[in-house]
Image 1 (cartoon, rainbow, N blue to C red):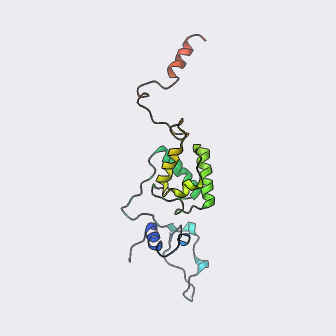
Image 2 (cartoon, rainbow, N blue to C red):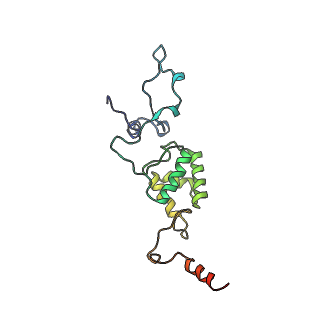
Image 3 (tube, rainbow, N blue to C red):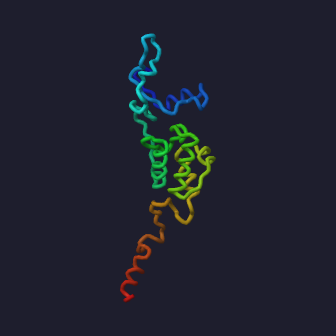
Length: 179
């Protein structure tokens, strides 16, 4: 439509029935005009480098993408942004749609293992539809003794409410018994 800038989602939706997955671009950029040669063909040498162009939004005006909501989501979103070199991650984002590939997937899995102590296979990543599903898979595999990812505060249980932090009273009692 004239005057309407399509979103990344709009373009992917339009191209999916016409192209195989490997031919659908992972990055879309907005150009004010296409540089042309004097013959009217695209002047590839005059195209600006991709990092100097404005990326197309993934959602339309008025639509919001829900971002990471839990401490685990924030940790995983940080890993995804580092591996994929994207500014932010939404719960509905797909790793491969954002530009991920097999080598980036391996890097992602190593980072998840190092930071969260969770062993994932490539199949775990390939079988998850989006960031939310990937986060849920990681959450399923978190070691039960941690209750949350390392570096994140575990949720307080009902028995913890109103009690002193562990070791707090014992430490003060030990310091007063003269030892």
